[in-house]
Amino acid sequence: MVAEEGIVKADRADGVNGVTPFDDVSIFERSEAMRAIGTTIDSIADTDATVLLRGESGVGKDVVARAIHTRSSRRRGPLVRVNCAAIPSGLLESELFGYEKGAFTGAAKRKLGYFEYANGGTIFLDEIGDMSHELQAKLLHVLQDFRFTRVGGHAQIEVDARVIAATNRDLEAALARLEFREDLYYRLNVVELRIPPLRDRREEIPGLVAWFLDRFNAQYGRQKRLSPETVALLTERPWWGNIRELENAVRRMVVLADGEQEHAAVVVADGHRGCSTTAPLPPPSEGLRDIVRRAAREAERIALAEVLARVQGDRLEASRILRVSYKTMLNKIAEYGLTRGRDQSGATVAETPAVVVPPAAVADRPRPDVK
Ligand SMILES: Nc1ncnc2c1ncn2[C@@H]1O[C@H](COP(=O)(O)OP(=O)(O)OP(=O)(O)O)[C@@H](O)[C@H]1O
Ligand SMILES: [Mg+2]
Image 1: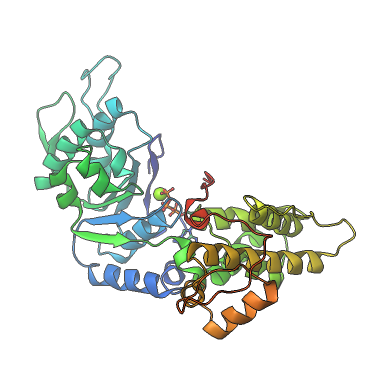
Image 2: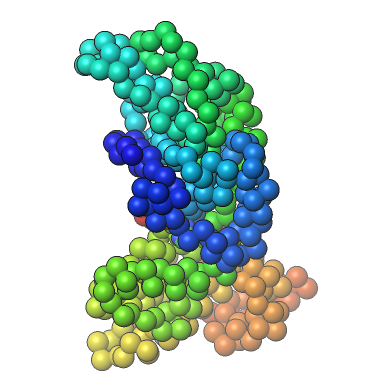
């Protein structure tokens, strides 16, 4: 239908315009958290309830927005996505609501806005937290009765559209700083769906990796397979860039002949950043299987050390965080000769001077800007 700046797609999400519908079912089948979100979406499928999607960058807010539309009674109508952060604030009003011929210099003819394009379907207001205060007021006004005038016009336009909004911002903090209007916040927040970061739903990773592998093999005409060790490594990484970062990692492994070795080396290098050890990079004579096995052990040792440091050596707490039994935790600590610290009983555990990680290292590691 329309493809211009600010609109990624104003398409028929049911594939009518040749858009392949996303693999909707599997999105909500890989973890308990996503299953719960799928259930909520089904329960509001036949309503026009406004949905506010929250979550870090790359967790899948676009994908979920598409699923909400596809599962709703509006699925045959358009899904119009507006990236509020990508449009200069001075233009956003005319982009959202359109303008009349002669409304301003350069307005040679009437132009419809995204709200009008979304008539009969869904409008997805992405990055809503980046909208100017002034436009927030106008948007709120429109959301009251879905009536507005085009810029420079007088006629009242009425649209029938369902609204989905999304943000990766801390809206509550923005409210406190008076950057986001409270009334708009409550108007948008009828149903709030918080999509957890990938590191909190790691059980999805093997399924996602398989899915991306199939997709990229088909796309690039490859028959790449990944070793179980590589999948284990992928499952352990923190993925600050969430599914987008994982997707890019798998794409590299499919496209580059040595993508898998490269990833193993990156994990080793990453793991040693901030540690006092100097990690030898894989010797060139080492085979892939050995490189990956060594990197997997290294990743495990570092994860254990980091978590133990974070919880001041509390082995019970560490086993809970890493989702292993207490017995496995004790065995791993012994296996890797890990740091001295106090567990809940006050007893000390063995220590290695090799890994020096500040307690906040896990949470505060700088996040790569992966898009
Ligand atoms: N469940 C999933 N299965 C497969 N791929 C997914 C899934 N969720 C997200 N992706 C993919 O991950 C990438 C990031 O997803 P998406 O764009 O929806 O994230 P986002 O939360 O909107 O990020 P941002 O805040 O940066 O806009 C996309 O390429 C998307 O196709
Ligand atoms: Mg997005």
